[in-house]
Length: 552
Image (cartoon, rainbow, N blue to C red; front, side, top):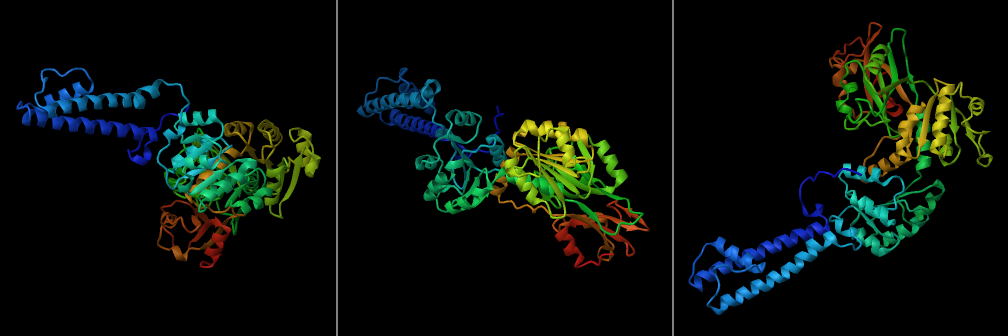
């Protein structure tokens, strides 16, 4: 069960239907009592000629409305005052019945709960339909971004469980216009659907209610994208294929160093953030890597997406892989001193093994560049892999070339098989980079324990992708290469390395200064005319850099 969230501010749009009804009732009751108190106090003075304090009048009104007596004020001699007292009595009876219906009875009655009453007021929100990839992960992502939403869940028990946990969820059939209207579909800006074969029906019904609605659909196969586009889906996402592609891109993103000399001490490492690492949860700007005077954060893999360079606002989560440049000794020291991280030297890809040749494995194989050899392995001959066999067997892995492979991409369908494959591959090779896909996000930690270097969870990636689409955030597409080049330092003379690194919008950064045959990475160093600078960045960023600075 999720802990209750703190209430940040009180406004009508943040209140549920029942909360708004309760506030209206309390406000109405208070105004009624105040009105009767003022009128009664005036009547006792002007009509009965018995002036008294307003507090005594307030007491009499409350006694009358609750039918507990009148105290010493009765009887009243004027007709107007008697009529007023009868009116107050009748009002008290009516308010008593309303109080029972609004406050008391709902606390004890066993009639089905209307989850709609828990929804806050909706406008420019997201409607989510039949999400099948661990709903809480997606909803937590949306709430973290401050994005309003309504989830329509066809399973009544699941909808109630989510609503009880504080999520904005209702039970309903998303193919029915009435249930979409309950989610205020006409005022929504985005529909996220994961309804399988019912997706087309859901989308068409939703667009009938709101033709300006943007639609994102999750699908099991990329083959359905064209059909979904025909019914109005703006973006179709096949999570298995997407993760296969991202794992392959991660496996073949090398670092090339142009013009390295014997005296250079710059090395490039991948640093994997684990859950028990002190880096976990820290934003890039506050990480010890950024503040380290001799290390440069070149890039980062965040849920399979390459950020080059990372944004200062990017948060380091478990499974984040940071590409860091600096002296080998400093990198070793940092990895040794920082618990919960794993350091791996970045090498150029040579041979890739793809385990599992379904939707994800096919996407992974297709994402590999033509210069990289690959062997696909699957138990089913119908999928036409390069090698048919049980990938959990050592003989199969050896036949696929695990001894010489630069990376193993695991995209088998079952998490248990994936974990066994990772463990078997690691027992056969310490040098091979192992990248794995799991369905259950809770299996990520187990995959690391089994020996994986990088793990993507379908649940987590799907949730982050949807949240990113909603937030309108654009990330850099994965590049084929991260490059380090040596360049003339003339444009930077007089500036410190720290000054040059501050601009993170250019896509490239200064790793260090080569002076007298030695590379100095201390950010406090001032660049001099005879220096050379070591620049890191993506292909495109380095090409842009080289158009303005002559490479040595």
